[in-house]
Image 1 (cartoon, rainbow, N blue to C red):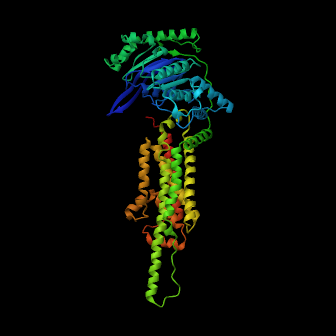
Image 2: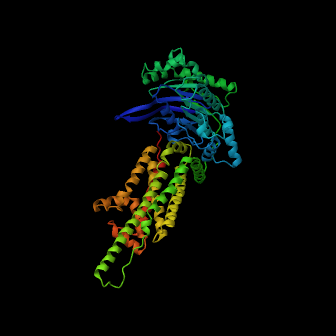
Image 3: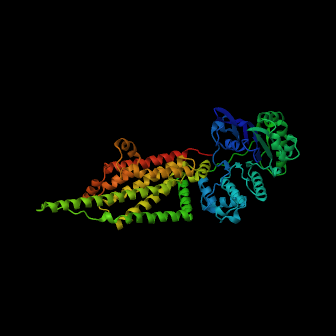
Length: 585
């Protein structure tokens, strides 16, 4: 049994407290199908999130099966299912693949047979078996809502919360979803609570909870709804509600609550007698103020390990990546075109630097000419080599930004939903780091090896390659942190573009910055440290040539590696914070 005792959820608005949920007290027995209705902005979704534990109650207490959730902690992930308004499935996956991933993330199955049995059961329950091989992106609205329900049913939750799962559907699909929810409430004593704007098919609900301004205006059987509000049709209820404040409606309801709860109890006992419910009848004092629903102890479901969740998330991410043809094409285009851009400028970097003869020229004019020619070679080659290295660095920074800018923010709501369902943030972050790590290595190694083939790096190529990998990893990590910390994918993309845009001018590779600015900006500019490390990896003559054309002071190799490693670490820490922080709308 679920019971709310004077539950409120309060926010601050213009410096004043505002109760979005106001002193709600209801009792919902096992095997019950309840609708939460009311005009827009009355607190329906807020109440549902409060029951789910997403909104911490400001006052009052929630009870489930005799446990005070306000003191003993939220429900276990396997005890509760929450179906939000948004889609919780990835478009490139099939129905069957979506359910398999959901099951592997929430339930520790014994073997493959146990996994398949659980998936097949849910497919049959929700009527999705005939379309199990279809991709999510081609499903109808009603089929997507069924899939959302199915993904919650894989753990056999005892409490199923649904937020506007019928909104936007055609009448037939809406009727099918309501019938499905009704049937689900009749299995295993499952309690189903559905938020809805629609008052259609109210006869299928065991009770209707009407909210107005966050307060309870009515909670009783559908047959008594119009009688209580003294209207002929349920559609007239909303206009009737607007004639009084929520507190007045709640005060009126408090006087009549006992009689209506007696009727709910009688209806429940009738369903049990007719065999529609298999849970014990409701017991308690008159009016339902003190209710004790004695049920069998639930069978706890073992949760998958962090490693198991990590492997499932990583396998799913690669599957989504390879099915997104646009993303694959973009990655291939970047992988091929960016190194080619480097090679277009590599010819100047190949030119040798002439050496002066050890024997002095008898003709001073000729010697001066030779010295001038050598100096010109140094300027031309040094400028080209420095530019090529910085070009590599900036292009890899662009790759890193493209890799990670939307990686978390683009699937924010799905991540939050899966965390609610028991996915550990560590497993989620590990899967992102592993996926992005593969991209970083592939991009950086290909860039270095391709450029080396057309323009032989005249120095320690391995050191040069290390800095290419590290700058890509540093920018990828920082952009992943941005993606995890901001709310929307658009914000993450914009900030990541700014991050890369400032790399070149603030690196000092083109023009040296004033020392007062350089001291402040340099620690944060990954491009400088990768460029500086790359230049330091050059051989003697080429290194001297580059130094002859730059005004910026170079840092030692070990310092460059240390700072870039710090950037990677800071990015991972930022992403860790972002994945752990709840950011529901």
